[in-house]
Length: 356
Image (tube, rainbow, N blue to C red; front, side, top):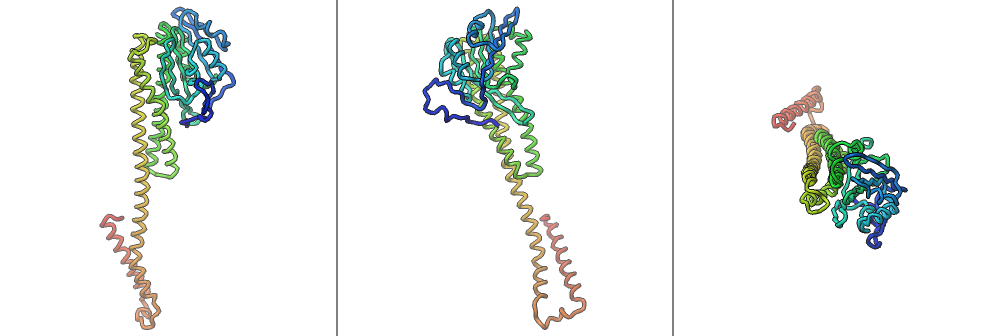
């Protein structure tokens, strides 16, 4: 389950622009690869030294610089070569950022949360993805190291395979494709959580148990985290699809509108799930209350049945000498029969009243 805050105390008192990594995923080294492509070909360079990045980015065509693993040294080196503002570099290393968009003239910076389903732990994981769009290049920063699950892998395969429009259009279309891949993974996470919510709902309705309350609270926490991570994406995509930045061509704005529709759909699903979970809590409390009422009703009926029986037993349990029934040969079976008759009569009455 992702956390809302991560090691924020380490930033207290430091001046703006201080490059300090904040987050759970720490890397000793940043793995950098550079892919360059145009309509005629594709080249890729892996494990690129920091000093060669600018030279590779100036090549003809579109250049995609992939940075996996965040270290202060690598981020600072990339910032120096591409003249990236220190506050942007700080935001990239501070992985608890609210999704945001910033236009610095020469480049565009977008920071979003990527979500991936982890089947082996029956949960999902979140990490920060930062994208910088320049005139002919895109730089992507992800927390996960090489070998981890990368939400951008599908875009990489399309670029490497030379398939589709992505290989014929500019860097802004690559930027769109990366953002689209991130948003598409939101649907996978919501589908996974939707199955868990449906299962929990059935369990609460059929057999409410105290341990289900913990699962319910965890799912509510997940919905709050998703809301915090996805709602701001609507704002930044809205700015992009309205064409308020010169870095996005008109031909790409149409595709960004599709992302905006997807984000709206994701937000609506999150709100529906939140309402369902709130209703499930009410169902759980009502089920527990009804179950307690049924138990109390049964105990009350049993107690009511035994009231006349206790009275009869109490009368003939008194130690008076002159009680004729005590000397009667058939006194005991007669009293037992009367008790049984009274009990059956009361049970029948309760059934007629539908109290049983």
